[in-house]
Image (tube, rainbow, N blue to C red; front, side, top):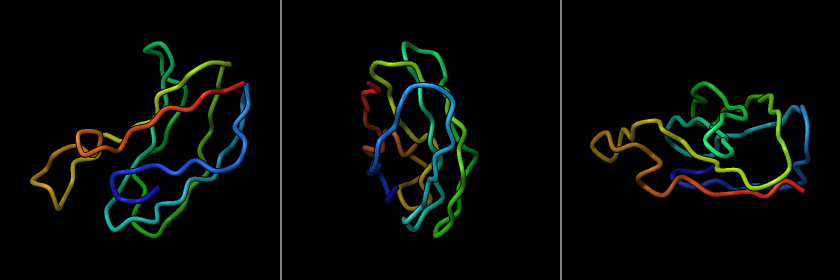
Length: 91
């Protein structure tokens, strides 16, 4: 992840898995996933330049990916409101 955007690389499949998440931005971030309003996993806050393993339990279909951390550089606006959201499709 970078500031205000996610970059998903590699394959993400159905079921339980560990995914390495890297914060390459200059602000703290988190990653949250949901499908049909149900949580599918996520992280606590990840410091700039850090990485963490995140446990996900995904069903096939579309999933929303987002970050709710308030921006230190944008008057406390949540990152999701600054464009830090995307969607992925799990086959």
